[in-house]
Length: 445
Ligand code: UDX
Image: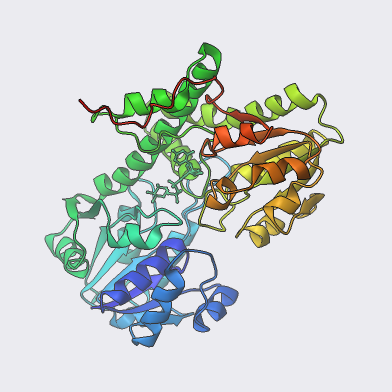
């Protein structure tokens, strides 16, 4: 099939490369001239493992093209809208880019096109897109508007897109649903076909529940610290109940990124507008918002007033395997530490450039490596779960530091190795002297 994709961000570019790999002929439309220039030169403008190769293959096979104008939609069987939907100041979702894309699309639309909304959008946005097309498209144009939300995670986007847990299709017409199913038929996955509004709400339900799990784990971790329990044992022991599951139960600095914070805030806003109490999600947000303060307080408990104290922050991306710093807890921690008057040194394996942009006018030292960043630090905070931070030589870290406090903001470091190196370890809910480590042992008869 011929596909046009409006927007070359994470979702748009991954979807373009994926569909090209399925031998569809895809044109990805990007208005941002800098980003378009990079794409036309075959360069992916952000870090996403495997995407460079997938894009290069699509270009080489002649299945993947880039454009700065809407014209390619004229001969497309399917047009995806994958434009940004940022959070507005009042917590609602800003649909300006969706509206603009729909209006521009309407002027180019010919008969028989399936318009697919891929962006994460509030319930009812598909109806809005359809109304814009009805108002502005040529009378001869025939089209269906379908919702096909994306569930990829940054850092694992390719595998998530190739092996989704499910494909969700929301359509008013059988024709619209069948077209998207045909487009994606090579992907082996459960398919949920429903109405458009339900498809739109499924995305928010999934992300909000995942965020809820994380805030629940963080609440349990704080209980563990007050009650002398071990959060890893507690969350594993509870999670082995098949009805609970163990995924997204890791406590620490909390969730960040371009999705969870935005999607939960949007659902709270839309829910309240619909007259539904959204207390459960408001509590999820408030637990998440409080977490960085716990780490600042832990630093103060050991170092006293942070003014003039040197703190090394390892990890600025919102998670490992990305250079995305949107709503990153590492960045947030840097800002909090600067507000406390600390001297901040920071490092990230991939996100240094993005961090510089995010922290303009902030007086921070950017280290060339994790070890160099720890030099003369009174404390070290690991804020992103990069594998390299788990493999550090902690003896050497301790020798580089001035102090001996290491805070594990992602509860993934080897606590025993860190304490064996003479460092004082802190991890949320991981602070008791544990018995034998039987948490992961399988008891055999
Ligand atoms: C998320 C959803 O997982 C994905 O399905 C959706 O399409 C987009 O939003 P993403 O934001 O890319 O994906 O990353 P994810 O791996 O979900 O992590 C989100 C945040 O939660 C990160 O800051 C991560 O550090 C944090 N997290 C994740 C935890 O704090 N604890 C966990 O157990 C898991």
